[in-house]
Image (cartoon, rainbow, N blue to C red; front, side):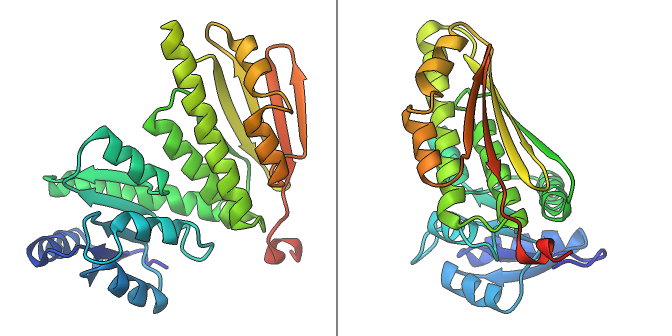
Length: 269
């Protein structure tokens, strides 16, 4: 996908002046820009070769930037490509929608070239590490309905797309379930004007995924009993989707585990 000297970045922007400006900025900082004016042209270019990252405007003619992001992030072939949304939409709800579709980062216009390039390089490095890592990966979620939790859920999904043979529907069911639990925990804390009731640590190894929910704030044990029991809505949905093999409650924590089906090339090595 990339060369050490000149990573390729696909720009998807319908405004010619902004598209040209972005291309000039990327060229000046050692990237190779590839330009598309809409989602359809972007898909044609992607069919000819994958870039190292995508800068994506949301307000596009035809297929929207959100729909393009969703399509790319639910395909095993294109999921590992970091997508940085670059838009004038700066409301919290817009940011949330962007991350809910699977985006890796969200940058608002206007921007400085230095800040954009810094974020771009960090996103490329992080996604490369997730894609190429063969060891243990640990992901933490604060369970506060935050954008950070959405990004963490997206990171987990990317890891599972890259490392396992799980179906898209299974991975998306897990991601959606974790986001729902984060929102529920955030509402729980808001009602009590306290800390989030639980914290989540996800450990992804070569053959097993372990999700550890630990009581944290006020009412943490009650939250675990109410929302992470095997019969509760989210764990039950994850189990039905084939994403949870076992649910083990303990003092102050609940552990969900899944045996991971490896990709064919991994099982043959």
